[in-house]
Image 1 (cartoon, protein in one colour):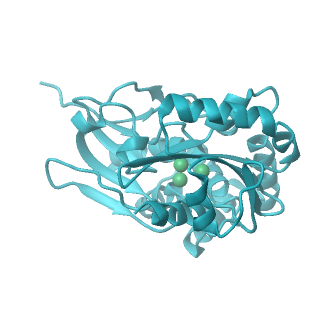
Image 2: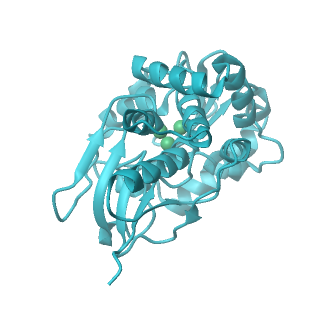
Length: 307
Ligand code: MG
Ligand code: MG
Ligand code: MG
């Protein structure tokens, strides 16, 4: 009987790190293990990721709609609420991630590797570089993911290791990190014809916090004005979404990548947000100075309020 393949997959609302780390880690596992590993994705690709895959001529992974009964390795997340449906009935074989550990459960001992670095792709590239083989196309998408997740090394999540690995990859590819980084940030910023709902749900994460449900969307942009001017319509949409999905608190962070600040739109239990940040919410929003990272500067403060 042929062996069952193992899917390597990142979080819903995939970003460049989730996609690149799945592709890169599958490559690494196929080189080093006598099993079959297949990269997969949990949803449609955002414009930045489409741009990156096209630029380096890499095929997008296949879409998986359910993980039920499948062998699975999770990358770039470990919180089941961010996984594709059916994760509770999947055979969890491993985790490779750079987020806080939530409560994933496995039936057997598994390989569980997390590091407090700026991107999962840093960890994947390190493994591939140590193994001694890294195709240029793969180096390109991994470098892009590192620059995307760390906002070209500006985010507080960035570490020395991210820079060292990114420098090695950039050298292999003869790419200037600042120049290419700016090009990518502009792709990330393409709001264009997006509807208010697409703006809120484009880069969106759901969190369980002591049986309460909190969700946080983020728009990272070099031109926040194009989002802020749609504030009223976006808030209408957020009020619909919170009712539909029964969240206790819903945020949208509009992050200015150049000024390195965020404006937060807040719907639901506003008081929790105010206590978390010591900021008043006025007309359903608040300014968060120096806030770039949802993971490191927002989620922990909110979680504290609910726990
Ligand atoms: Mg991610
Ligand atoms: Mg990541
Ligand atoms: Mg991100």
